[in-house]
Length: 177
Length: 188
Image (cartoon, rainbow over all chains, first blue to last red; front, side, top):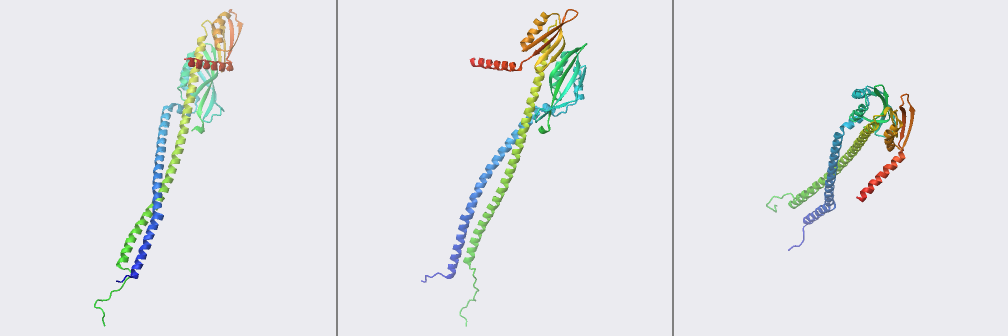
């Protein structure tokens, strides 16, 4: 029996070995690390997506809080936004006064970044202090945020009371818009 | 002279074994390359997704920050408005109390309400009426009270009452009352 291997079979064996080594090398050196990296990336992506979802949920929650706050304080927000109009103010409060004069508004530098403060001096005639109480009640429900400030003077003037007082009007500054 | 009865066939390098080998390894290598290409694509997709996530996260963070600022501003506005409304209501109560304080026998002609004081002008039938019925309650409210009188032709007296609150003393009083309240709570 002849024990020799033919040359063709040797080539075949060598080629098979080479291809097998290539397949194994490629698999172990490139494919498996890449696969591991892919698995890690997939987990990281899942984690980041969860994180993003929690951010989105928090954003929705914050938005709903803001909307609720804005709707609850709609009147106050509007009042801060309104530009003081002396004529409209007079019209709205004419029932409390026999006469009402309002000076030009002057800007007060209060260093409050969010708000501008204007001051207007007011002189008026009223029939009784009750009118002034009613005016103070109505000013809290008016179109502007107004604080009646000292000094306040009441002086008898025949049948009426001459009153003078200062009002501070608070308004949104440009920074707060 | 013919040595064989069969026709000679051409010999090829690609024998059936070689072909089988190539097919087998070809499919294997192709599968490996496809898998590798898939992983490369996923790698690229991962970096794209991560970029999108970071962009979205930054956008949401900035939105949340803006919303928080708006919430703070609305709260600040609400607080300020409430403070102003309360001050107006307190002012109304103060003026009501002031006019309630004046007895019917005394007539006021002028009242000046100052930040830390009160100046009253009026007429009284006598000093005693003024002292007992107006000055006494005013003394209980203000720290400094000064009065001056001018006689009128009808025997009545015109008076000017100047009253001031000492702000330092007022702060001390508030502090003392707070301390007393705390003491009472502790004992309770």
